[in-house]
Image 1 (cartoon, each protein chain N blue to C red):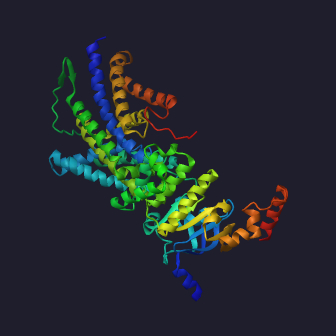
Image 2: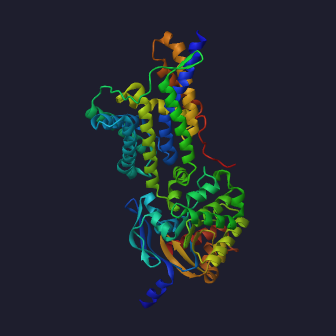
Image 3: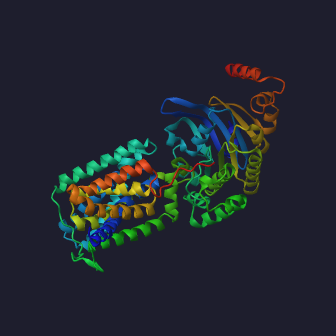
Length: 271
Length: 295
């Protein structure tokens, strides 16, 4: 018990047995517990539909927009339970959520996207944050005047991250930032994330299907399957784990696709 | 055909059209900030007319005090409509919200009939009946004032949408969820857009009330407003302004040409034709945004 309290003190975010239901009936995550240490970078890995996005939404409070709710368990930020807070209050506390699929404001320019994202901060802070975002992503500055809908996928992802940074987060959560991007762009974006984490001490919770890229920059990782955390270890250990290699790192060189599929199915039934 | 008469009708038509734009701008305002087409905008104009009359007649205030009080009252009513009727529908299918605005329209019309009855009441604001002369052309003074006010409102609204809060409203209309994710209070933003739209409706009520008096027929301005808003592109304030002028001119000249042949109803026919043709031929209107598709 003492160990848990101790760990809690060093964690910016803790989830304790969180259960989420949509529409009062369908259970999306079934008792997820995880922690992000202050200033740390943690990955949440898993397949499609495993409950990664739902977990993030339970933290940012965006479940309500989809008629979902945390039915059991506690989400705590900096030691305080936040289950009852509105999304904007969580943003004000310092939780930023970069949505899956980028979701930039398409008809606004990048500049206006950033201004719109500064609603919970003062005008003065907004100007300073905007300079900072442009210094991280000079390409956004070059394209600041054209509608965001016309930016490339990589630029939109940078804008989505920049928009989140405008809220002055203490914890940045990203949902599949590598989705649909060329590998060199993924590398570039992940480098910038590491840099912000290093320089400003921003804590990061990274949700990814692209485990190879994610495990390169995080210190710890959780593996979620069918709404449950099934594994938690350091990034190094996860990279060496044969199951992770099998499922998420594409490590099975000497088996054909059919064998893998069969193996995976069997494996899932067994767990 | 008398060319002077035609010109005069076109010119007065353009001015009336600008007054239609004022109703359309209220529709555009709400659409631009929450993607909801508000079918109650005409009824809000009517309600605003009654509210101002209540201040002027029941409380015996001079008209120049009743108008600002009416604006404040309608601002609050706009917030109230969002809070009571629309907030619980946030995130629901747009058709339900559309039906809700239709319900509000019917409610306001029926409610005003119950409270104030159906007789038309004058709303004099001190514009003289004598026409203005532009060379040989006679111009209706009330229309000219109304058109001027519409242009001023247009400028104010365009400036508003460039401010920080205006940008936030446009962001809400683009993507509710993304707006929530960056800490925007979507509910408050939508409430503000209803409040501002109610203020625009009040200004339209003053001008239209002074022209045709206040009764339930003011709610029929919805038809002109919707036609102009759709023609202009639903989310473009500038589009609403130009579409208003266009509809006014077509309406004015068509009534001169067609009324003797058809016996009266040609204005409404022209409106209906404009609305139907716009939706068939140019669903995004003259200046409406298209959904952006990257190639």
